[in-house]
Amino acid sequence: MGSEGSRVIVPRNFRLLEELERGEKGIGDGTVSYGMDDADDIYMHSWTGTIIGPPNTVHEGRIYQLKLFCDKDYPDNPPTVRFQTRINMICVNQETGMVEPSQFPMLADWQREYTMEDILTQLKKEMMSPQNRKLAQPPEGNEEQRVDQKGIVLKCCIL
Image (cartoon, rainbow, N blue to C red; front, top):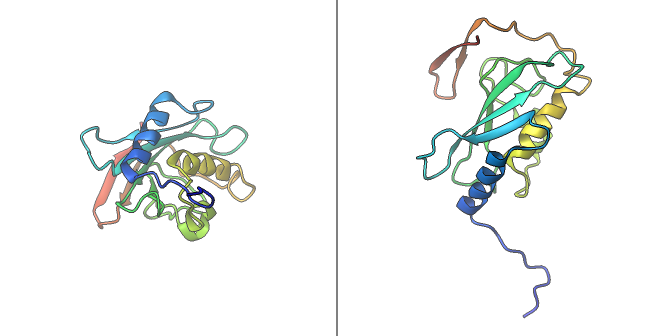
């Protein structure tokens, strides 16, 4: 009855409750945050994340809103991640705002231990990388349109 090689698999909802609690307490220096979109969503599918652009980059002072969607197979598979705010980064589809797993190693090489906090923190680090830190960004304050996964045109105005 040894426990060598065995590990406990935390059920999806318990894992998401842990992430929710951690997100509500605040993370690190406050430049990355996340929480649930709808407190009544008993399946905890839809989440909102925020990243404040890192200093000494073209992202400095900008506030980026993201949507994270945790399907029924999370955390065994990664959530889908989409920037609501327009951003120019190598790993982000410019039309949809989706973070492309093929361009973002954390999603491509997903491990069950990774969290939404890890994703947001890694995206912030990616903003500081040489290939992204000086990329020209869309102007702030302009009305933008973005097509979501279902083909519906989303309109938002950044004030």
